Length: 348
Image (cartoon, rainbow, N blue to C red; front, side, top):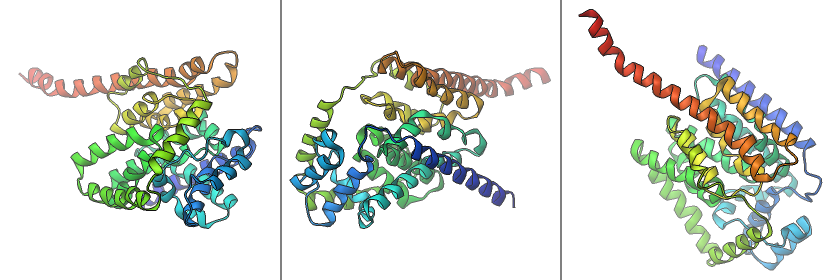
């Protein structure tokens, strides 16, 4: 009975949070963006269903028609990512984009299931500004972070096929999922090697199938990515960003991996910090609510550069909270290790 009540409560929190996100999404579409970025994935998947290369001239023309000058780099997503969302291409573009957005937000909201004290996490995805920014853009990073959350849940609950799928798909967007996939794979190798069988099966389907359908996709996709990178400036967080990872040393593996995922890749927009929602969920409670709430200081720091805003509003609050949590956990563990000796001494 207690389990059912907890599950119902979490589900209500999940549904309520998603409803708030959807309402905010309708209000926060950036005025300069002609189309949602999820439509890129849909265009590529639709091309594959039509027997066409997702990097063809036709797709590039569609990108330019939808996004204008912003889309002249072509499709910057690898074929395995497109195969992973292939069923969405069976739907009209507007419906597919809505389905991917809603599914991604629900997946991110599922961080409330990562800890028995669900209430400690429920406000985190609602208050963390990169989530809202990514939702406003319809940015596919939402989907990959949702897959990262799903990976952690699947490994915790031994959903072997789901975990294998997530491990295979996450590297398809390296700047959002590669580090989490590598660390998750190492964790699976140590704790439950049965996951690796499903991982290899999905790799054969998605990555092997990509070479069958579009043999030269690696070269063409890299060319699109290089063009995309040349159009926008980015901020490199190394080497000081490694202090953020070090501050997470006593948090769960998935929190450390998500912190490393953010700092090891250059960031060109606020949504690049989106994987930190996992790390904040590992901290949880009022300190996490305050920390993610400070991300809204971004709006008050309009006169600062992107790099300064990123450090002051996103990275430093997390680093301080993670350090506090890690030191507290270390002290508690040390006290527990010393307690039996103290008890024996007092009895003597």
